[in-house]
Amino acid sequence: MFSENNIPIVFSCSDWFVPYAVGAVRSLMDHSSQAYNYDIIFVHTGISENNRHLMQTMILDNPNFSLRFLDISDSFQASNLVIHSHFSIETFYRLVIPWVLIDYEKVIYLDSDLIILRDLADLFEVEIGDNLLAATIDAEMACEYNGSILGVKEYCDTVLKLENPYSYFQAGVLLLNLCAFRKTFAPYELLELAEKRNYHYVDQDVLNVACSGRMYPLAMNWDVLTDAGGRINEIRKRAPKAICQAYQEDRQHPFIIHYAGWEKPWDSPQSDFAEIYWQYARKTPF
Image (cartoon, rainbow, N blue to C red):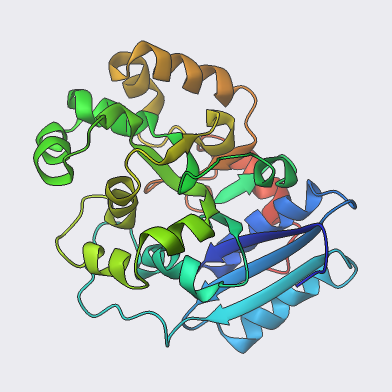
């Protein structure tokens, strides 16, 4: 979108989720720098014209921001994809990003249920070599593997067949090496992998399988999971010491707060870090 100092940031979102996602956009803008240009791209299959217009009003006085909407209906077929629990079909959209944004070599991908507290230029400049992506270790998954949820260990060992389950990463904040993805996979290969079975954590499981051994670990500050459903106590009790320590330390100085799971600040305004979400949500057109 911009000729220089261009930082592409991609969200995938439904029309229903737009009022919550714009909190992330507002926080991104409030922690940006005039030294960079930010190309914000929403990949979607049905964001309404009215919502797009309201979102565009957020950047009117910010010449170093672009907000675009990329309808991927022609590139995304969801016929055999399985979703469950609180997940939505939009979570699978990230699997086609390397082939719908062919003019970019790398992008930042973000879930829509988070708040950004640091300039994303710092994340974009992380050198990840020929790895497929950079992400944070998922502390909660380490707990589940160690027994907080029955059956997860067997699932990781026999279905996902992860070489190191404690390197399982959280897919809500990703620095994607699009060139490496295009060299490694055929255009619809990741979607075909996603269609093969009912995954516990949908496309996050798919990416962990596909990118095994080619993930650059980010500091956990970049994707701090909130304490939904007693998550912190489980991490303290069950996560390996190094993962637990990193989570607890980086939680004190988050770069991105991720409201992952069923407990959201717009439903539970007294929940963990909810007051920070509302600081930015109040400043949006919604």
